[in-house]
Length: 253
Image 1 (cartoon, rainbow, N blue to C red):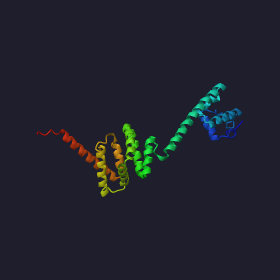
Image 2: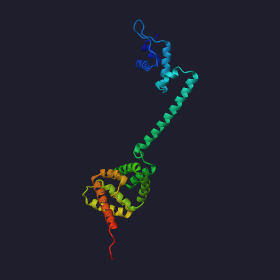
Image 3: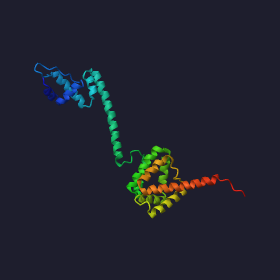
Image 4: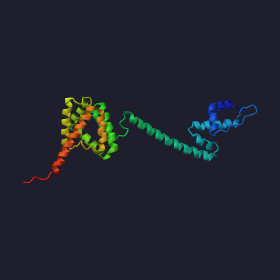
């Protein structure tokens, strides 16, 4: 007969583990003998070794009880099921590892390869990492808010980097993040951006679903808050003027 310490030592576990197996019902706890000690049989040692072996193999404790008393064919079938479950978990963990590796740059978190390629192209053009990360955030928002606009935006962004003037303005916008809002260069940049919007039929006064994107850009610097505000104001004035002219009655000749 074995004491609990001897039993634990025989099975290669701790006394605390033995007591835990008592609590969860895996290993029966014997009554105390006349001297007040619990004495374990050799069969308890065998059962404990089997429990430890199954637990070390990754079998959940909740399933070990059934396996301990299963017939050989039931035991084999249960192990087959457990193996299939482990294979499924391995597949999940492998996918998690792949995604973690992809997330090392923080850009593949929620973005397709086409957008990641745009961000890499920006870096190659000399755009600061601060602006690249801001661009990344706007794409993440756009993908959720307006997937159709995102697909169109990918085409337009790639085309814009093929245009020297658009690229020049983009690089200026990057540098302007650190300018003071009242810097004279900001006024010139606003004029250039306003002219670009006119030439490309853009209207900053109607961001629609993309208002949160404009807000994210404005958060980047006080200067860009001012730039976006002025561009939106000018676009709104042009739109209202156009609507007013369209609503005016024709002049009599």
